[in-house]
Image (cartoon, rainbow, N blue to C red; front, side):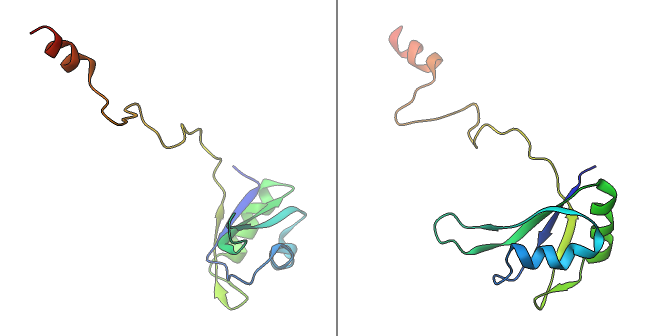
Length: 110
């Protein structure tokens, strides 16, 4: 289980302190942040609130899911751990004029 909750469907006007005050009744908050776009600095419409215990996080999910923050009904779930990624590239990396070795060698045998 996680002690961090994901908060989605946030109004673009919500900031970290707004999240902290909205979730303050559920326990000791160690961090509250709204995720922002790197280039524009505008909110991406979601954020995370980290509690000191998993029990507090579960209380927050139960108490805040489908509630309103700044006029919008928010979705609140326990945050999932980030999984390892290879950066979006699979085994077949492709590339310009990249050939399959078998077909290349077969053409050389003629």
